Image 1: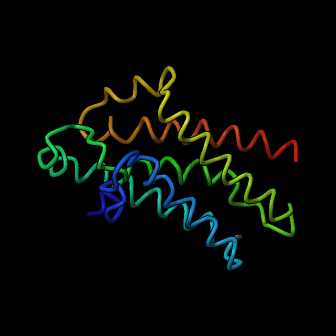
Image 2: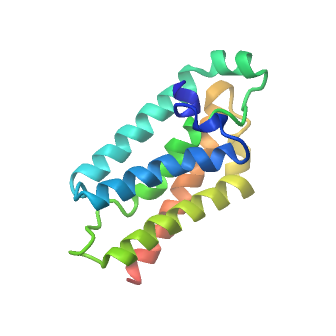
Amino acid sequence: MASTCWGLGLLPKAPGTWGSLFPLAVVLGCGQFGFVYPWLPIILLCLCAASSLATISLFPFYSKHFGKNDPPQVVSDEVAGQSLALLAMAWIVPETDVSVPVWIGLAAFAFVLFRFFDIVKLGIIERAQSLPHGWGVLMDDILAGMVAGGFILLAIQFI
């Protein structure tokens, strides 16, 4: 169940997008209720660590259960990567550092960038998929999250 992010990966059409929406919902919910700094970075790091652990440790189960090494239903890797992309803006406090619409826009931009790099898989992101076992499933998303997070950090410099 953890590898499908409690069933999000089982939803029809674009399961990776559904899985990526979970960390975005966490970020937006934390922003709405004022749990931003220092809680949001901690929450995202814990989410990334837990979903990474699920992706790697549950590999024998889900690869056998779904009959593929990287089945689309497994979205814990997307949760980990999206959490990293969003971590880049988690230190910004809405209404203090930026306006609420800008903060929401950054979160949405992180979501779009992560999905782009996760789908397109440029260069090393593509090669990371050839790592053995759950590492190949996870690392392309981790790298996509890092690249998207880098673009978010760059965007923050212009705000």
